Length: 51
Image 1 (spheres, rainbow, N blue to C red):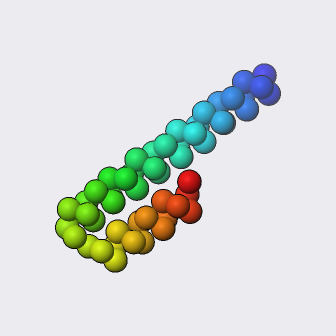
Image 2 (tube, rainbow, N blue to C red):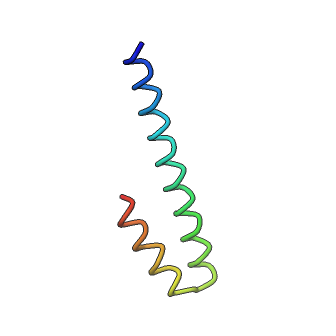
C-alpha cells in the first residue's frame, strides 16, 4: 500500500514538473515573439534553475 502511494506521489510530482516546464516554454515563446529581451533572459535563467 505504501509503495502504491509513493508511486502516485512520484507520478504527481513528475506531472507537476512537466506542467511547469511546458508553461515556462510557452512564456518564453511569447516573450520571444514580443521581442522582450529582459523577460527572455529572466525566463531562460528560470529554466536553468528549474532543470
